Amino acid sequence: MSLRIALASNTAWYLFNFRGGLIAELLRLGHRVVTLAPADPFSVRLAGLGCEVVDLPMDNMGTNPLRDLSTWRAFGRAYRRAKPDVALHFTIKPVIYGTLAARALGVPVVNTITGLGTAFLRGGPLQAAVEQLYRVSQRWPHRVFFQNPDDLGLFVDRGLVGGEKAGRLPGSGVDLERFALCPNPGRAAPVFLLIARLLWDKGVGEFVEAARVLRREYPDVRFQLLGPLGVANRTAVPRASLDGWLAEGLVEYLGETDDVRPWIAQADCAVLPSYREG
Image 1 (cartoon, helix red, strand yellow):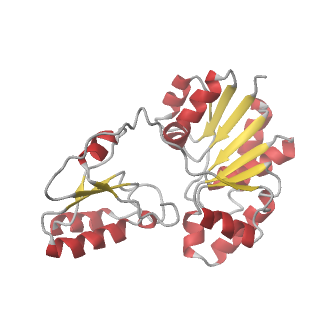
Image 2 (image 1 turned 60 degrees about the vertical axis):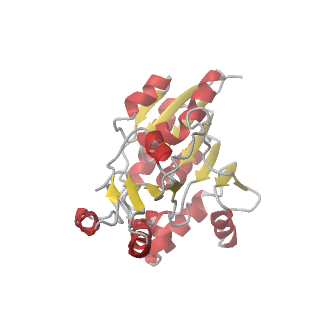
């Protein structure tokens, strides 16, 4: 039976890079796929996979739940037009507001909690508000998946999701043909590589401090950062901080790329210090 399946995220970039394999498989099986996310350069690539692409405006920087009512209404309009048989939500705002909109229209939902986000890491009134939004919205999905046992346990323990709905996946998946095994470069001095948006919440500060400590004793060791700088996020690393690290000789900044494989192949160790995600 062919289904009409909606996938929603806070960026088209996320859907293409992290759910592209899932989308391709759903299409191969004969299902119709519609993606919902704010338009970005990867919207065209999603369309190239064979999806119907919907530009769904979303304030990814916003933290005011009242202002986010516009996101809820946008999901409602999109789902009334698309009429999906099931909606798959990724990232915080689609998981919350997409679920509430789908519930009002009787659309079955499967959510994936891909990380807790800044609200949980910073605490305070914002965390309390977000927890309440989760508590209300996550009563309705058919299933809520987590990618590590800590997040799953936190949501169940705090009553944000019922234990009978919660499940754990071992990650987002890796295409082992695209990311094939290759020989170790075998250098005398190792290269450590961190691939991430340059955010404090990704552990960039801890990575740089490790470089500072190790390079005192092992000056030939190299530390590389690969990922976008100046992203729209409240925990973004300022350009001045990066410039200071470069001047100090602690790290190399590789910029950003659509294909991380050559950089992985040249590194000896991939470092994943992200808060709660690694």
